Amino acid sequence: MSAPEHIPTIMLVAGEPSGDALGGQLIEGLKLLTQGRLRIVGVGGPEMRAAGLQSLFSLDDTSVMGLREVVPRVPRILARVRQAAAFAAKMQPDITVTIDSPDFTHRVAKAIRRMAPDLKLVSYVAPQVWASRPERAKKMATYFDHVLCLLPFEVPFFADAGLKATFVGHPVVERAPTAGLGATFRAKYGIGADERILVLLPGSRLSEIRFLWPVFRDAIEQTEAKTGALRIVLPTVPTVAARVKALVAEWGHPVLVIEDPQEKFAAFEAADVALAASGTVSTELALSATPMVIGYRLGRLTAMIARRYVRVSYITLINLILNRRAIPEFVQDDCTAENLSAELVQLISNPAARVAQVTASAQAVKALGLGDEKPSVRAARAVLAVMREPRKEKAAHAGAASKKA
Image (cartoon, rainbow, N blue to C red; front, side):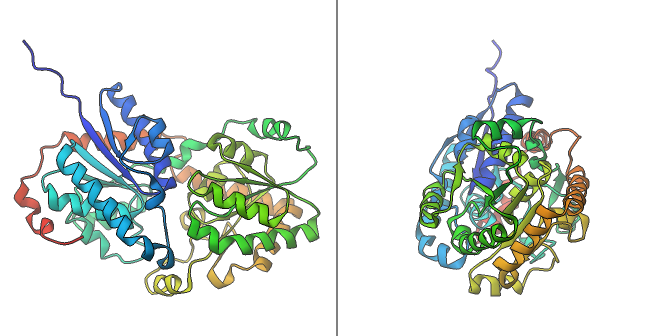
């Protein structure tokens, strides 16, 4: 009698909505390559759960950013780190993949390495070591076996640090919307073809919204004073939806809040312009050919610390890839209502400015893998390849296992 087929167990750990979205796509890629013969466990949000994950806990505890927001949550975050690591040590998955959110997920990885030194650990979405603190690549090599990079120029940084790395492309390119969604969106919500839509995206974390909401709100009011009324559409995510709705109610301005992730892309296609926090959403807007203005603010102490380490000229991925300011972006003290509004007015009133931005965005998303094999499938293939490699001896990670997270 032949031995029963081994069904691999893959543990995924995300810490915030953007990682949850990537995790959901990765799960679909893994299911495709294994014909569904696998078990997915770990930590994720609604998109990963929809793809088949049973999450250990909600992302509400871990989706925070900024010293003021993180410090009060440290005990709970560390408890979640221990919970996830203990689960991995007990479950003994064939491989564990941490997804983005390095402040949380790397702590989980280090804790797993201490508790179960021989388990395989992969980082999906490399920290931007080329942007700040390049020494992190060498530290990662002590607790990760492999890193999956979204950008081609990231691989050499990790190779030089002794950590195997694979360029898999940016999964955001898989979210390119189907043509025609915009017209359907306008019809559904009774928005006329001659009405201008501004998509408002103040962030997916409560800390981001706290800093960006007042300046984004004022920027819209200043813009409307010059362009006339705009239809404001605000896509949000479950982790911050309640707060967003409360702020909209306080503002008193007509705002259409949508929570369906599929409707978000329809809104992007329908929109004339977007005002957004820096993050993955800027690339999603680029895929939708939506002209945008990007703003970002942190707490003063957090920003002061960040300035000591950040080594890049831009925060928007499109600008980083093109190495020029194709997308207007304003950070910290430059992120004012006046600056944001001036660029919004330009994009609304100047067709040439809109065309130039959309053309530049198309060049950038092609470099991210648009038109090639799906990045999530490439990532899934890389995960399965690492999973099939022989496990390292426990002694190989003895030094790392003795270190505190």
